[in-house]
Amino acid sequence: MLSIFSFTVMVAQERRGPSPEMFEKIKAEKVSFFTSKLDLTPIEAQAFWPVYNEFEKKRFDIQRQIHEFERMPDEKFTNLSESEIEKMTSNYIGSFEKEALLLKEYNKQFLKVLPKKKVLMMYRTENEFRSHLIREYRKNQKKE
Image (cartoon, rainbow, N blue to C red):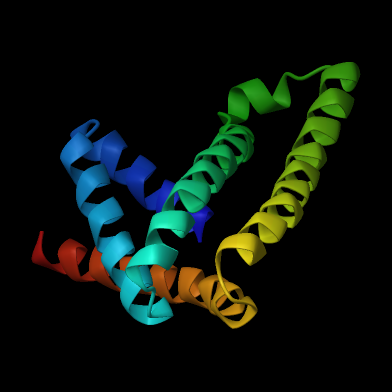
């Protein structure tokens, strides 16, 4: 989900420049979407959002590293030495490992602040929100 969100934001930024308003709008929409889908009580929401926001920030940082590699210009990519290639492949795979470890670590924290069923629904809701963002992005592209 985060990778699609990151990609959408990065594409939009490349075209129009950074937009803090866009980040805030998406964040507010996500809070509303998750709170509704997960049927969070005020107490649950108060405990959940700080943990989720911390998790999302760390995951975003990892995803940014992955995207930097994936968006590397062809000319730089073709001029890499063997040792640089080896290092980059290791770093690339390591980013996915970091993301998996982060998810495992935060899953434990989510289970401390939400009922198990809502934690499971949270993962599903992330995918639903990603699909929602993609639909909105496409709808906005057609308008432009």
